[in-house]
Amino acid sequence: MAEVLPRQRARAARLPLARVTQETGFWILVVLIALIVAFSIVAPSGTFLTTFNLQTLLGDSSELLILAAAELVVIVSGGIDLSVGSLMTLGGALCFLTLHQFGDDAGTFPIVLGVVVGIGSTALWGAMNGLLITRFNVPPFVVTLGSLGAALGVARLLLQGGSFASIAPQGLQNALGVGKVLGIPMPFVVGAALALVLGLMLARTRFGEHVYLTGANSEGARRAGISVKRTQVLVYTTSGALAGVAGVIDFARFNSVDVSSGHTAALIGSIAAVIIGGASLLGGVGTMLGAVIAVFIPVVLTNGLIISGAPSFWQQIVIGAILVAAVSFDQWRREAASRPPRTVAARSDT
Image (cartoon, rainbow, N blue to C red):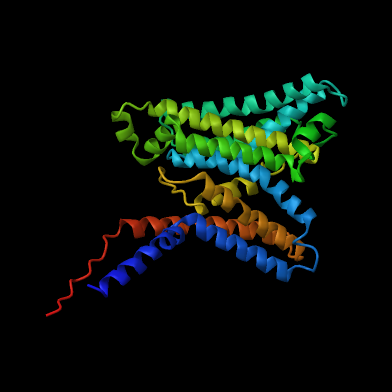
């Protein structure tokens, strides 16, 4: 008995540490720290761990953070949204075109109007995605894949097929582009605030509970009295609105609207961040904290490769590999969870 108690106390002392190490976010943080250390060693001295580069990392992560928050809400609900990159382009294009009507000296009202038009239009597009999925029973993959091409096509049509460079109004640049709060880029402040609000919504509100239940078992949620279709429409509307926010921020940061690619890399990076952060493609599982930490992995990789002098095409290769690895890990995790626990035969003292 005297020998058993110390063992029990030691085991109880190890339990909190075991719980921490079993959390997905813990290992993502370990990987992120390892990447930062590796690039600090590999990159030329005085280039990676500098105030300027840290601000660059935060600024570059802002749009990906917003898109990852959008994808998390959709994936937790059991869906997928492949259109966020194209809607990001469309939102920026509509904001630009609205402001263009008022000239370069647009005041507060035109800026607010441009932001509202950019975000509101993509929110409506997201609602349309949700209605097609819920009312006509079209799979989310098909609907959002179609929207990926259609939204980008509309943006190209509006901009007459080319990317436009212009000078965004100073008020828009200061509010959402180049401004800083205590040295932190304003785009990241906006992205972090949106992620916090959505994280609290998922974790603490009835709507968040409905999102998780819908993703875990839509039929069970329906029988429990949850309006599954309404929840799904709201989820895709939220995703569309967030894509519009990212598009407006992108326009404010770079004073241009790029319609060449539809931000495909941002789409892939956002999905990868959500899966690496612990969400399941089957729905019902995922946390905002895990997604936020995981967002920095592709951003740090891209930034570190550029500073280290790696060819630009390696960035796309690495981000694509991250997505494949994330999905493979999700598959392995689900298979491991479905295995029956191994039983340990009782040991006899006789």
